[in-house]
Image 1 (cartoon, rainbow, N blue to C red):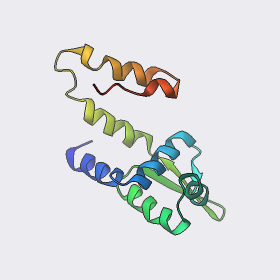
Image 2: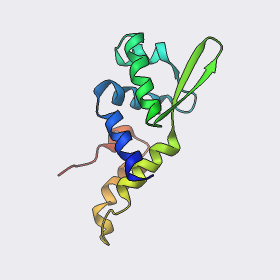
Image 3: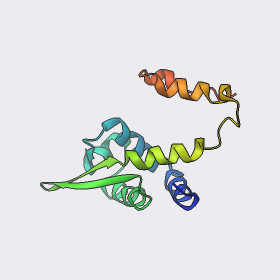
Image 4: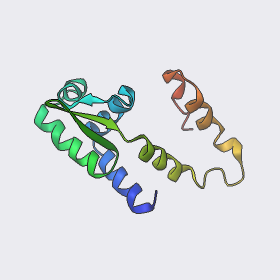
Length: 119
């Protein structure tokens, strides 16, 4: 991922409903969710979710596919991995102990353990 792509992703995620939508799609896994179900899950109207999904899709963070009369949205995991890698590329500067808490948190299957200490 390059800097312009990362900036587009961060701009798209800089709005609470879009961030919530992406997080819900990450939790939903590769099967994704229909837009109406997603709207209900994050507490917005169907027309509002459509606007936010368009923004996330333009940033490359989500994908869509048609299933009958529904459009199913899912997280674009390779792009999300690329965004994380972009952030972590220069991590640690030769001091792996700096990144160890983040690595440990994301290696743990318990979502409660994924809270990284920001101190």
